Image: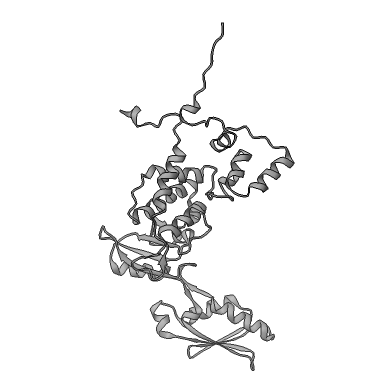
Length: 329
């Protein structure tokens, strides 16, 4: 029975996988899907599939699912969510420039500071680390006199102040507490920063997931990126109600990750790096590939399927792979 489950030698698995994913792919919707809890639209359907096979540096809407260590209660999850959500200065204070006196006034919102468990002194320390000028805190107003007298530099420093990081993890814009199907609470974040999240106390490092394949590759390595790629592709197809065998998705992910990094499928990735000149020319930028090959005297060994179709030979697939030798005499 085990022998029957194996693929025959010469089976055109690539073509079968391409057809099995490509044909249902034509029936996918172009709409985006609203994830419960995350306010922004998360791309699914065709836009998400294109994003995955193009191996984009960052998805349009990255998100993370984070589980916590210890007691799994809503209160504990909310506390952790508060710790990881990024807070910038302009979200807890009003920043105004006084060009006449060449100073900047930061009026703190005490209610907002209480919510995120920060004091005006904490904010003052953060600002002090970012400036070389003098600081003065009085009645929740921080007056900053920058070391520069140029109005342009004051404006530039104000812009920098607005984005000053006070608390939480960079890139995590929002963190929402959700209840999973298993009844456990977890945190879904808008934005992704896996490296920092794994260092965060109270986070279950065994169960941190991001939909950013490139980030998984950077932090956990190529094998984890491959698993992530398979999961994401399968999830997109399943969400559209398209039944595609997971092995086709696995073959696609294997092809994209076989060289040790996640490569796109297209002229800048796998198709543009094929061994044969004719195979590259048959896909895109035909003239460019033919001229480049002719100027460097490149040879084509005709080992692939595309090249043999072009020259009218039997393709090395299935029975075309079989070669017979005759012993004469």
